[in-house]
Length: 160
Image (cartoon, rainbow, N blue to C red; front, side, top):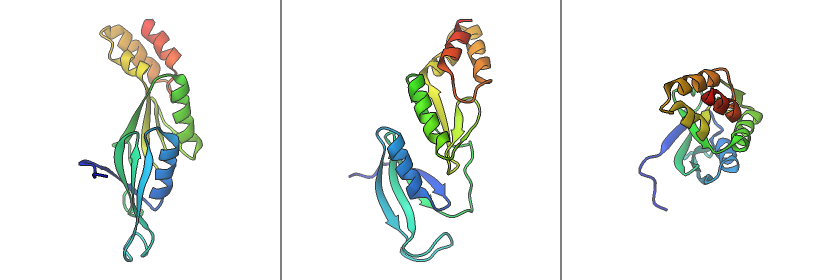
């Protein structure tokens, strides 16, 4: 397997492998590709502990690094997942939030490891890029009141 030219590196306190397995079980075209153990002791762990995990999330190459508690996740980085309908939106949202994650606003949530996700229905993207600026404003205002995106409510707001 040829290594990816560009890989997203995500810092974990020590649960990179658990996160990678959760992503692989939750999202299509996702997998845990390799687990590498520390060759010696370091500030973040002991020899033999999992140091890095190569994994794929919806076709995107990632590397989970068990670096310890030095750095924390923020919303400055997120995975954005385009969903086709309410069932898919609900499935991903509920998987993340229901597995120790937390809800945020406007389709954002965090998984139990603190990584941010935007569960974004394609209908929302279409509504907020509509050439009709009034429709965009109505859809945007509706979205601002939501945690998980309600596609029917977005489409109703878009129509006016």
